[in-house]
Image (cartoon, rainbow, N blue to C red):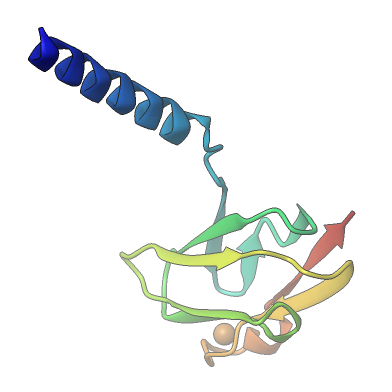
Length: 117
Ligand SMILES: [Cu+2]
């Protein structure tokens, strides 16, 4: 009898743990495709304090992603997915750009992240 109660308590505990995990909202993922010489999309709106994962792929050559204002950067290697997690901590519009020379037109490879309240 005593053992039954202990086992029941164990499973109730497991159930509570599973409910806790399920209650965690999945982080928003934004896929961004890089190719010579742009990002798609190149305008992104985020909410202050809400975590987001940017997933980059490159259709052709090695690219970079750099957003100094948001403290984020990554190498975007063809055939791989580069993930950058951002938790924006300030409101405004912040540029990002390719910081790895990828050909003539590289200097125009930019975009903007707008963070709203
Ligand atoms: Cu580039």
